[in-house]
Image 1 (cartoon, rainbow, N blue to C red):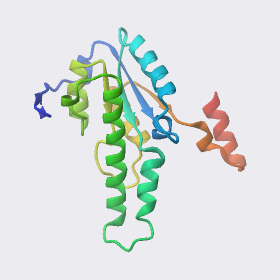
Image 2: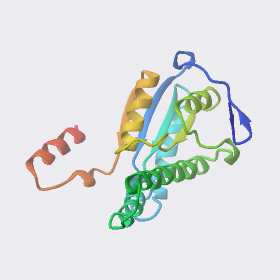
Image 3: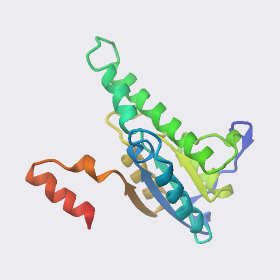
Image 4: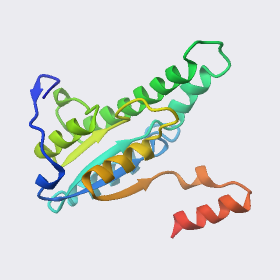
Length: 182
C-alpha cells in the first residue's frame, strides 16, 4: 500500500505486540478558541511516556471549526448539501490530525491514514498514529470512527472532550454529565 511516497505493509490487529488504545480527541480540546499548547504539551507527554507499553490511535475531531464550516452551508440552497457539509467535517478532522502529527514531531511525508487498513499498517511502524474521519457516512462523528477502530482492534476506547459542551439545564443531560465525570 502506498501513502505519501511510503509503502506500508498491512497486518491484522492480532499482529500488534503492544496493546492498542484508541483515543477520540475532541477538536475543541485541540483548538478551544485558539490552539491550546499547554494542554497539547501535557497530552503529548502522557502519550510519549506510555509508548513503551502501548500503541495509540488518536482520532481527532473537528471541533467548533468544523461546526462553523458546516453551519456556513446550512441556509444555502445547494444540491448534496449534507454530503458537502460532511466533507467539510472530514477535511477539518484530517487537518487537526495532520497538525497533531506535526506537533508530535513526526515526519510530514508519512501522511494521514484514510481507512482502517492504513491505520493498521501505520501501527506496524509507529507507536502513535493520528487520523481524522476515515470515510464519509451520513451523520458520522469522530467518536463513531473511534468506536469502529476500537472494535476493529478489539481494544479500549477513551473519549476526550470538553465536558462543558455537555452541560445544559435539562435533567437528562445532567445525568449524562454525571456519567462522564465518573
